[in-house]
Length: 417
Ligand code: ATP
Ligand code: MG
Image 1 (cartoon, rainbow, N blue to C red):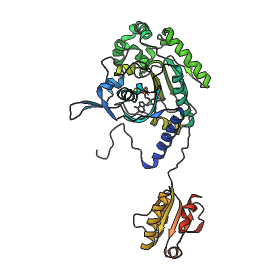
Image 2 (cartoon, rainbow, N blue to C red; image 1 turned 135 degrees about the horizontal axis):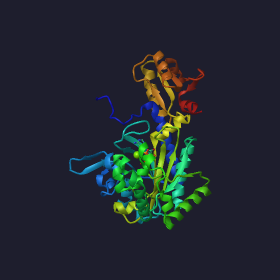
Image 3 (cartoon, rainbow, N blue to C red; image 1 turned 135 degrees about the vertical axis):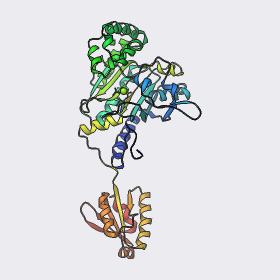
Image 4 (cartoon, rainbow, N blue to C red; image 1 turned 60 degrees about the vertical axis):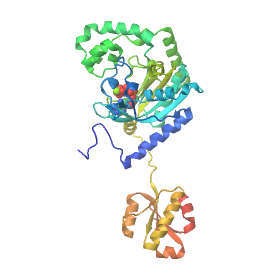
């Protein structure tokens, strides 16, 4: 028990971490190009931030949250998603009073009590971006293009962008009635969760993962046919913005999104490479959310992208992530005097920006060389009595086995070249 991590969590071991650094760095760099600035919010928030009133019908809020009472009797929840915390920070720090729009990105852990399977964990990790303060479909197109560029830069070839509009509270009302009418004769066959959704928010039934509910909802009235003029115009605008950017998409009227606060734009990037959990990225517009959380009425749009699913897809696409975290040089020493010289040199070289290691296990010289091989050091610097006498070292290239003698003060130069 003590040596087992909780179900649905995953360690990232040292030999794997470079993959995470790779995607995280690439994401941050792309955000810079797009003008999204990083925002960091706490891992836990007040439960009410996610559980706003009884209206929320999502699985996440109803049965997946990690919620506990702290010693001060407050209800606390580990964040299941990134948008609400970003909105909370936006409202709390009155960022709406500054220059608009506000464009954020984040890289966070999320916690959801789900049934663990490939690409579905209880602690997983997300990248996200959010734009606050504009209802213009330029913002939606920019955010979609950001996800698109990122997925392309990560070498993902087999992925499809699907877009839809989920309308606004006004036009959704009519659609909801039509949907209830359509599902009424099938009600008894729906799963228990969907029976509940039937009253609260029947649109969510279209997103049910159960094959039976999926079959029952085939041919159901689609939101796209019920859009009001404003929502229809926005959707047309979005499509022409994407066309202008040369971004291919498929209109998929079945895209609903898991959270209730979405309005108008909804989109997903889906791959067939990783099986059932094929949605790598999902997002959309949430014009009502800031106000719902207690800020001034402010439109917003954003997306979340699962890091674990991204890495799985990259693996399936055969993407080779470059291992950049190697050791530039290993310093092998013979004798106490050499050891002292090695310690001094190691510190100098590290200050010069090189990745340098020495033996700290008391190995003899032969085993020091073996160890240098094991950790894939590019070069081995040898210091012994001879070298000390000449104030120089021998540098061995581990790939070619070539060896050269280098004066002490020129080592950094020799390593960098
Ligand atoms: P799904 O339909 O697969 O359950 P979702 O709609 O619940 O996804 P979002 O809330 O939109 O997902 O989260 C954005 C992204 O985070 C998803 O596209 C996915 O890549 C990732 N994600 C969501 N839940 C999990 C999970 N339990 N484990 C790993 N990744 C996840
Ligand atoms: Mg989900």
